[in-house]
Length: 174
Image (cartoon, rainbow, N blue to C red; front, top):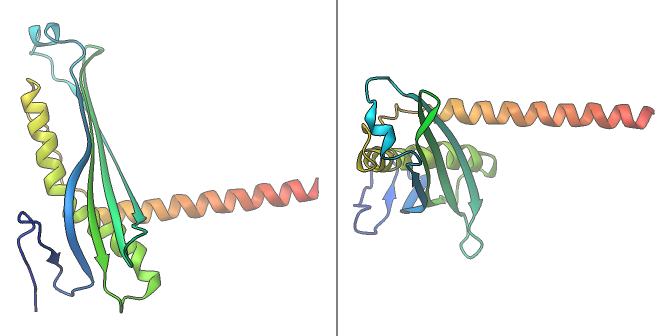
């Protein structure tokens, strides 16, 4: 059975399987730069080149058992005719807790996939609003596959560890 309470009132939201509970979400850092205003608004005919990058981090909250802070970071920039239109950076965080019966090996994937999946709609709305309020078209960020993002991150870490082992073996032989 699904247990769900309003997160807007500062209450918890629990997933249907009750393995992860979302306690809060918040802006950790928000930055918007419009370095070439007002000149950049003079030539709106050319389509801007927009770049959006994402990253996700998590850390245990020391004072609370099985509680984690998850932070979704979004960096967006737009260029037009080699001029920067805007730079926007958002770190959007949330506190989650993991059910006591969850296997230790499952915690990291659940936190790093379900945490940002919950935070993403709020972060996307903030980025859309801040770019609109900065005088540009709202930035419409497409949904992110957080499972794929996590898998790519794990693959990169495995490749880095393999490269480090190869370097260690080469140094030992030398």
